Amino acid sequence: MTQDAQHQTVPEVTPSTAPSHVGLLWRAAADPLHRRSLTSRARAMLVTCFVFARLDYCNAVFAGLSRCDLDALQAVQNAAVKLVAGARKFDHVTPLLRERHWLPVQQRITFKTAS
Image 1: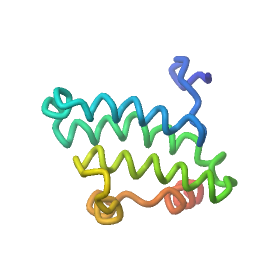
Image 2: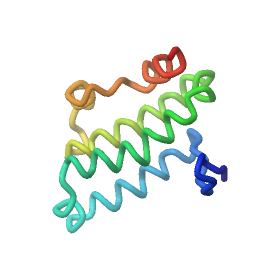
Image 3: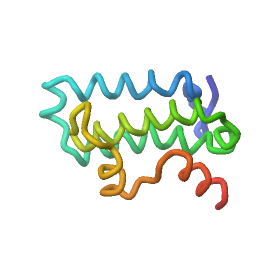
Image 4: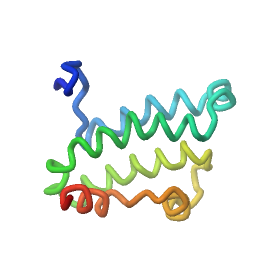
């Protein structure tokens, strides 16, 4: 656990814990009752707040990760974009990422650490 700028305790996101964070969000949104009640825009805001905020917060740490760990983070991003788009399990992710102008994890880390 760490503290953010507002001194609130937040769980740390690592390659091993990131899927569980997205899993909680995914299960909540995958529930038919929640899926009907959340618009695509609302799902996008949730993913931005809970997933990308944590991925971007840790970019300096993620810059030195192995390919295996980066693949795990990419799987988290893939699940997030499918959640936002309302896509099915076997739908291709690349067009969904492009539609939303989301960079893949490796490129996102490079871009964020270069700024």
